[in-house]
Image (cartoon, rainbow, N blue to C red; front, side, top):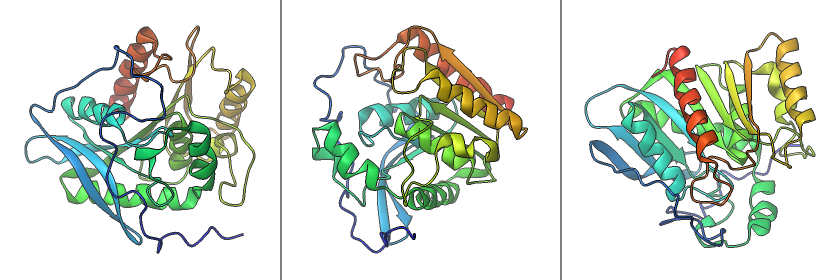
Length: 278
């Protein structure tokens, strides 16, 4: 069954969220604020099929070219947390860009119920459209001072799932880092394969960072993904943080685990560097 013909639909979300997502009860005092000093940073419009997606870009000042990192959002949109991640990556030399991949389906800037976000937006996002939009984002970043030959991807929560999928989609990727992305699930016509299904088809080394207390991602799923990759001769490094739950890197939420978040960030940068990027 073909995916819905979405490219010609008008973008519902034309600008990014200001501040943090409304779909969380409060913002924790632990949230990190990274300055844009020495960076070219701000909202951008990224050309894609059928129009433009809003996104956030952060890159070092200067000519470049800089290695490109695609930053894939959680289910809550490209809000301040995702923007800050881009700035953190730019400060260590990356051209970081986070496209609002759900702009065709809903205005996440005004959605307050995460269950409606999942039901009305996330579950209706065709995987193949998201892959094409990530391809378009990578091409746009390369046209703006990024180095297409040094392309990596990282994603958080649902973005972690998309990181697995993109690693099996784009043969030009040098490395991928998935933060607690769901690995299994019920296939649908527009989301036909899980990360486990694709673990043996990835094109690049992949680092997977998971919380040992994440109730939504059982150990059996992690083991199945690792086995699928191993059986196919693909390199997947699975790191599990005992005591950490889902969203342990999200410094604006109660799930934040500073020790696990810091170690995961260190491992991510080292993984990119070990694979020739950074």
